[in-house]
Length: 282
Image (cartoon, rainbow, N blue to C red; front, side, top):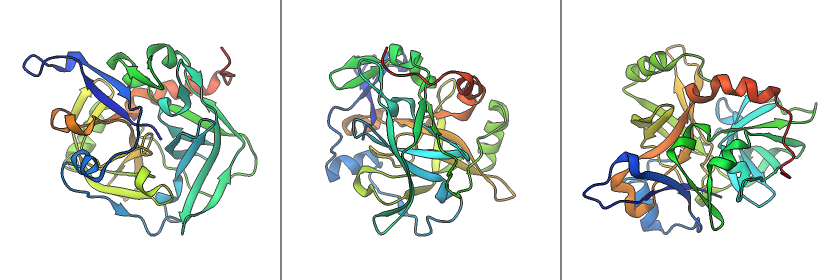
């Protein structure tokens, strides 16, 4: 499990968003007090009971060779979307996905797939700055924090994908305005690794930068790559962003969580699908 944290590199009096970078936490273990601080003082998550229903069935868990656990979303019958940092390890090598799981009940997964290939722009690894076992991530890399996992098997699970948001930024802003800037986040967090938890109607607080949202959904390690979902007037869900980073608990008052908007990578995904799968050995 990995979580991206904000590192503040300036004095509080003169600190501005231009001085922020991101980093992996070396230790993913959080105390109950630290969790509450990350949750803005109150845990608003609920356990999803009907995980076989849509859209919850399409939200799964990805595991990599290093044992890293993240959340991933089925966006096409053979493709899942997750955070880019979930499948990269310092100094920028591919951390291969070894298992993809869906629909967990009573700590048992109904579907588990092991024939997987990661599709990630390996230039992201060059933009990340190694820091021990983790990363320091400049804001210039934030919009590239996404990856696709391809299911390399004809035996696909009978699950309904969640479509990506297809509109542009202005259309997304209008759709968010109609909901009071509320979305729904869902993932498999570190304190309930075999249970899907959701924060319904959590708040998008604005744009951190082009293509990156600030938000106040309750997330923990394990939630990286988890979807932020928006429901339209007809009741259809779409994925509008994926969870990327969170501040350290002691810095919660300085920053909200951050998620990469679908408007930042929708076109790039098409190009990524046409690229050969990187071996990860370079």
